[in-house]
Amino acid sequence: MTAGETVIEVSDVSFSYGSVPVVEGISLAVERGEFLGLVGPNGSGKSTLLRLMLGLLKPDEGGVRLFGEPASRFDAGERVGYVAQNVAGDSVEMPITVREVVSMGRYPHVRFGWLRARDRRIVEEAMETVGVAPLADRRLAHLSGGQRQRVFIARALAGEADLLALDEPAVGVDAESREAFYDLLYDLNDDGITIVLIEHDIGVVTEHASRVACLNRQLYFHGDPAGFAESDALAKAYGANQRLLRHDHP
Image 1 (cartoon, rainbow, N blue to C red):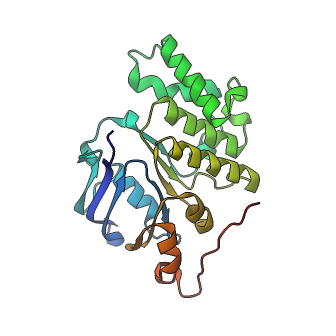
Image 2 (tube, one colour):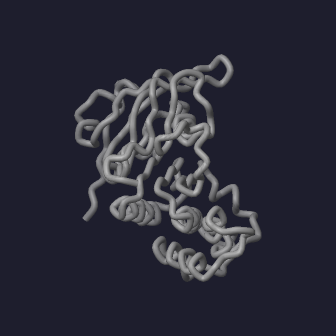
């Protein structure tokens, strides 16, 4: 990717499940190196918008481009690391080790599933980066929720993803692990990886993200966290009694 590249471009997109509108007339762009936080109340269309961005759903109206190509036809899946909502919880029963999960990130790069020395080195480096290398031979089922989320991030890094798309990745994770997890995302973004994050904790988003998109079917705000704090987007999207809470850390 080159500086200034538009990673995701959403143009006047609308989507309904049957007769129920979920996303209405949304336009926004995500530039290379951004950390975009998607916020909004439950049922506001955040997960649907993320799936539209990744080409997993096709809009009823409007268009989405991913790395400059129509998202529905984008086939360089290794460039995108997608951690769906509760994927770590859904995979608890998988009889598979941490190293095996992370190695899956290399499969798009190898023929017939045979990992070469370079692939194995990338897998080890990805585990080191997210702090799960000491757990490499443990079964996924034996890890905490926060540890499992790190494993799936490592899988995306092993695939050399340019974009991380995360749907409420820290649900069910304790407060200390959550903070460490979001510090990791901040560091990954600082290293140049573009991140799109859905998170219900608005304070976390405003602390870590470089851009915020607030929606409830419609897009009420898209800009920097300071502008979001000063806007009336929260009241419009959540209701008049909502206010922005900032997290203070020592």
